[in-house]
Length: 275
Image (tube, rainbow, N blue to C red):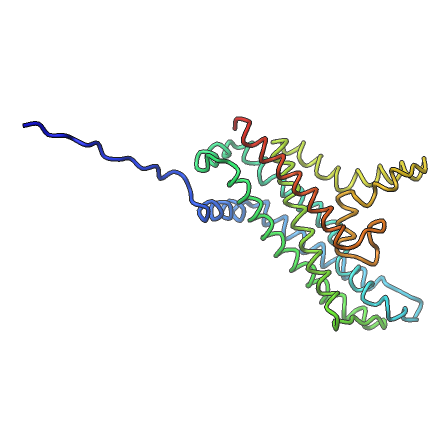
């Protein structure tokens, strides 16, 4: 008699499910000390700036026209976003570049061999976490600004919901900045290079283009200004200032376009290059 011996089927349990990928990225994000410090600084800076601007606002003892009260309150409550975006941009780069520096990226890509889901999970977790921090910063700043400005005759009107909606959009923009920087960090795989590219796009590029447009009066440079990342972001949540004539929804689409290009480029290079 002969017996047929069947080898036991081996299953690969090293690959994570979609929920497992997101959970692992959340654990990595919240256990890194730089994440806690970065988000804490965003909140503190936003609240501090709102407090300073509220007390510094002075119209010579006369309240401004009522139709711009909400604009003043909104700009006071969201001015901290200008500084907060620089902090979350650095964090977005470090989320991925730090893994390349430590070699952890190899473990990540071993657990998620298709690679793109890992990047998508990083983007999702980073977006949600930064959005929550943005909401805390924006509405915390509002709670500080409203009573101080109210004492100067500047009263917020919440009846139409536009003020609340714009504060939410400010938090959305802050989260999109972090995801945009994540894409750049994935493309460059370097903390220094990614941070330089992110801050250059957000802060330096508008300054250079504005200076060039002012010196040369080049119409193409002026026309290009509203489509820069940070300019469009400003028009996204402060419609009174606008972004060179773009509607609020158009500014939001411009910001989304920058983010999508960054993430797609990062995903393509992540699949093609070795860890």
